[in-house]
Length: 545
Ligand code: NAP
Image (cartoon, rainbow, N blue to C red; front, top):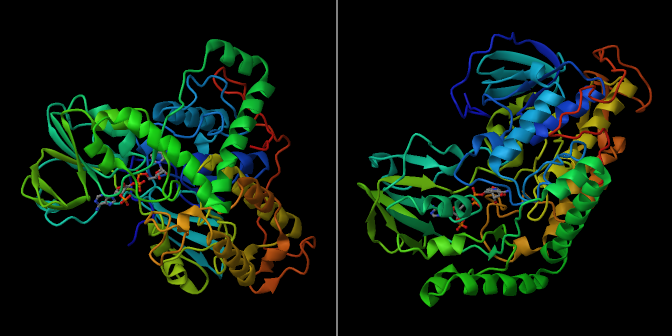
């Protein structure tokens, strides 16, 4: 059977019985945790979170490669309702973000809802009962509402290099770093030069004997503005939370300005290209290496990478940059596009993820048993990245076209969470058993997206993981992010069909007609009711950014 979420680690035993729940969330990263918090605060307590790993954190749990960090500032890359005044630097490391999310899970008392080591293998909508049947590695879960919250950067992509299976040494992907392998004194091949490679290559370079970096396309690299946050700033944020909100707002606004170049006027990117070129000239004295490192596409077409350590690392005597990518593996040697065999002891792939061909497409069946993949035909589409016609009571978080090249995904996640809450509250008020986006609303929305995508920097000719197999950008949101927020957060019932029970449409969103609606409890408080910890400040506002 296809697996949506193969375990990142062997499943841990969990004695908690499976069964029927009102709502099932798949994944306990930023989006799953944020969704669970808001559901609980609104009284949707009958909730299970299925997580294949053995701790919360999602991508910030599974990516443990050396020097893994976030290239979006922490004040923005955190929940608006749970700012952390104690970030130690402006851009946080993976362990810091992982710990933030653990604190969130504890603080909002999410642990009783979590089922670790539960890989979801298949989910199908049962029209007769109006429930999702979710097959997990530990048994069957039924739920009225299914919320896949796994994110698009979950399943590592390893190129099918001829001869790779015969390589007699450690081979792993950056998102599944094998810490049992000591790379010290080894000859290592790093394949890929994206956001992950740019972080771990400078970290491992000093300890390996030889490092071959296989670059297929040179990325645009800009100076990294990370700096320590001073004690006085942290004290200010603790005593005057508005100050941190102000900083967050300023970061949001500055980053949003990039939309002008991304979406409206790609030619504006030339200004940033000049800065990136100067950065390279300062850091790469060797003209031959500089030529190899000079990108041949418009800045922004692929993700812009901030680093002050990438270029200096590539200039070290034990590093060779191999242009053209990796072609095959021959015995214990990796062969580049130049045909040269380079003997290595280990191969690390930093070759990205199955972002537009996620396994979920082959494992989720909606009305009439239809597979998502059959519907999508290689090009994922949804309404507001959240709902798909033919798949009742299913809400994606970080579904198609919710990605960003410039700002915080947490902002998009919170916008989608507001949308899902609008849908569930509307159902509750109307006494509806199912909610399903109307096909015409979904089509209109995607036609609009595609039209807006036409003039963007992502369509200027580079080959990026943003594009699906049909060449359509199924990944990014092509507009100001506040426009997404405005549209998603205000749930529009006209885009959806509400049904009282199987076959019966609800006459109006306000008319409670369904006897089949399962009872949901409304909690008396909307605050988490947990004492504030010193490391995390929480509020119940969803804030603008
Ligand atoms: P990626 O950006 O997709 O980069 C993959 C790299 O592998 C590219 O350089 C690609 O080259 C190369 N590649 C793929 N197949 C290859 C082959 N057969 N031979 C040689 N090279 C090959 O993957 P990633 O670095 O893991 O990052 C993925 C995304 O994760 C990022 O874009 C970002 O959204 C997110 N991320 C974020 C952070 C953060 O700080 N917030 C950090 C890491 C990752 P081409 O360019 O030629 O395709």
